Each structure stands twice: as C-alpha cells, then as structure tokens.
View 1 (cartoon, rainbow, N blue to C red):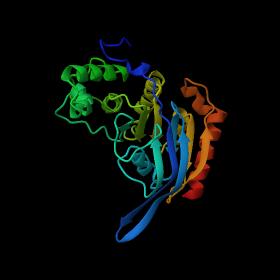
View 2 (view 1 turned 180 degrees about the horizontal axis):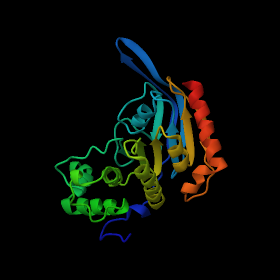
View 3 (view 1 turned 60 degrees about the vertical axis):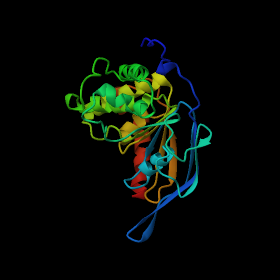
View 4 (view 1 turned 180 degrees about the vertical axis):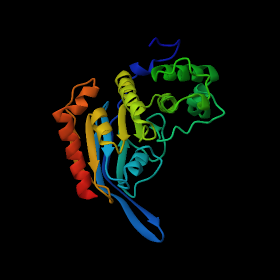
Length: 268
C-alpha cells in the first residue's frame, strides 16, 4: 500500500497497546435484584497480540469488552490501556467493532468511515484521505462512494473495521463481528482480519462463540466460566502463521478446540 501525501501509513504506526485487567467485577441490578455478571477477572494482553475471549452465553464477555472500551464501568477492579485507566471512551487508544456494522444508510462507505473524524472536527481533506487509506487497507479500494445497501454483509463489516481503524488506535476491540455472516464469508473475513492485523500491528481482543474461529485467529484464547464470569483457562495457540484452512483438521487444532469445549460444557 502506497502512503498518501502527508498521511502516516497505518501499518507503519507503532504504539504501546498493552491491556491490564486486574480484579474486575461487575454487578448489575434487574427486577430489584443484584446479579453478579463478572467476578475477579484478571489478565494481561501484551502489545501486538491477538487474544480471543470465549465462554458460555451470558458469561460477561461482551460486558468485559465494553469496559475495556470505556463504555461501561466495572463495579470493582481496574482496567488499564497503554498504562492508563479507561473510564470513558478514548479513540486515541481504543477502537471498537461491534457485531452489527451499524452504518448510516444515507452516508457512503467513505463518509461512514470518516464519521468519527468528523465528530472530532478533522478537516475534510485530511479525513477523506484517512478514510480512503483505511478502506484500501480492508480491501475496499474503489467502493468508497457506495452506500450500505449496495454492499454485501462482508463488505459492510469491512467498512465497520475501517471505521474502527481510521483514528489509528493501538488497541482494537471486536465483539463477535462476524457472527451474522455465512460460514464461507466468515472464514474469508477471518483471513482478511489476520492480514489487517499483520499489516497494522494492533493489539486485538476479539469475542466469539465459535471455538473454531477462536483457535484459528488467536495467539491466545482466554476461556471464561458461566455467570459469574471468571477466567478458567488460558491457551497459547502454538500454530504457525500464516494460518491455513488445512490446520483445522490437524491434531493440534482439534486438541485445543476440545480443551476449550470441555471447559464450557463443565461450566454450563
């Protein structure tokens, strides 16, 4: 990818992206009762690592991710991003990609990617150049003038990823971003995400219910128990990169996936 004039290429930017989660708990109130969603969750994500969170439905994976994004506050414990607390959203440190693309239908792909920069008052010429660069990075060069209804599901999610990258945060949090896609598109998007990760050096924390997706993508898989969510295992994925489809049928892949499944069945 050739850098645009006066724009620092995303893939050349290098910043600390470490995450420290220390003793985090979360309690919410429903129907007049306190419900403990998370209890004493602690782990660290080193800069540039791809870490996947898995666990039973309702174990607090997404809640934990939203706390890392500064969109929700823990009841107890602390979360540090690049060495500082994350009490409110900070796009300079953290980008977020949600399960649904949540694109504005009246805006083009380019304008949707620009939107966070528009809110920050970035000049039109600069934000357009950054949006075009981000779209090129996610493989949508030439689609910037298309509206969401003119894009496939996978392309919409690429726009969403570009929007998460456009402010160039060192940390990217992803909450089941491929859950609504068909299996073929999901596998393709997984490979595309690994390409983008390799090009940018971001620290990624990715939530999924798919054990195959978790092992295929991750450097490390963090397994959570049923509510209240606790960490019950951490698996290093010692598979070479780049990952290939053939690895899915290998013994190492199968043993890792089975180990995760045993934890989830036990806690269900």
